[in-house]
Length: 321
Figure 1 (cartoon, rainbow, N blue to C red):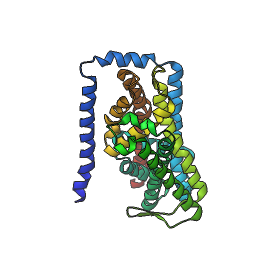
Figure 2 (cartoon, one colour; figure 1 turned 120 degrees about the vertical axis):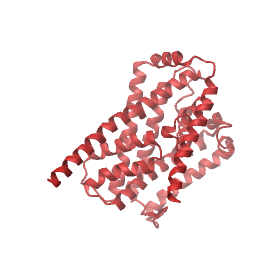
Figure 3 (cartoon, one colour; figure 1 turned 180 degrees about the vertical axis):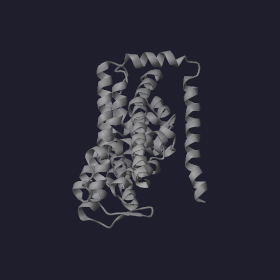
Figure 4 (cartoon, rainbow, N blue to C red; figure 1 turned 90 degrees about the vertical axis):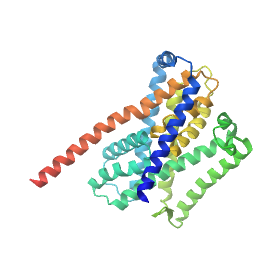
């Protein structure tokens, strides 16, 4: 049964990619988009490219903080910040592109942190807490968007469930999201019973660590959304808050679909949600996002993994000799 399950999520991801790419093809059918997209990419000013790069650095710095927070929860302070940053960067660069980030992240983190003496159980808690940090950040920002700007998701009417695009219901759902985050904070302050995630039990972090979670995760999401915001043209740009709202919905949908890198799913939702901007210019901004947030990090992550495995192989060879 387990082997069948191993094939289900990749199959769902591939189906999501195929359907989304087909819908995207229909969006652009009859248009010679290559030249228009390239022109839009060249039209982005150097200042906006610089701001998009700074947004990328902010996002990956916050992601490295995820790991640091989880290690503090485990009581581990002996691992250097440099090692944590490289491990986190490599983990997220690979998992963002591969999909199934929890599982692919677990493999990479285990290879890295086991070399520093962490047990499989400790790595499992670390992975779960990092995933929980991301979830809490998503709930917090989504709750704020849905409560204070519930009309933003009407941009995705017909693509998201109606309860999210209906203003009144969206505000209720946003309140529930904020309620969950408040309950988590209360659980941390009161040190409630451990959280049960599948077969894994995680003690509530102490409140100073929980506070760090609620800073790190929003910073990562704000940085990632900033890449797209700065790559979009000024004409027709709905503003950062609207871009953030669409980013949260599109990125969450892409993760749920399990499509590798959210390919197709992410683009389709964003293009549909930005009717005031020419589709080719939205696509250009999303290509810049993929380049800065996914592809360039993937290249560097591959190099880091190669050097790490080469070092491990040399160490093993010396032991055998």
